[in-house]
Image 1 (cartoon, rainbow, N blue to C red):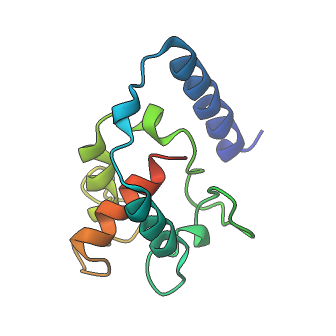
Image 2: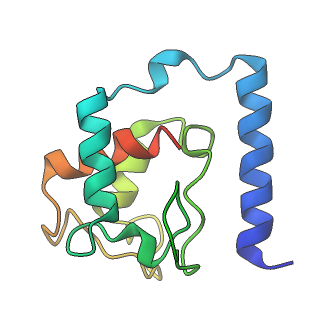
Length: 123
């Protein structure tokens, strides 16, 4: 089984486990509908986040498989700050990552990164 498929299966299993046990509070999704919509737009925009180039996520067509699938994000990143830090500069946690440092290189604004985090927390 491919590494990404194993990861996806594990992530989905954890999400179901946590959701069923009530361990994820409703307040874990902090973004407004408007912010979440903006986050999705930036994530799918090929000139901005372009997350689909490397990740399977949501209802995106033709996703890449370089990065892990963006599913069960609340279960995988219960600390929003860690998810945000991963987007801002993934090289801090993994110097060998292929993920570009969107914040460090100012490819995305702070508000755009926050909006993407809010959107990812809905997945």
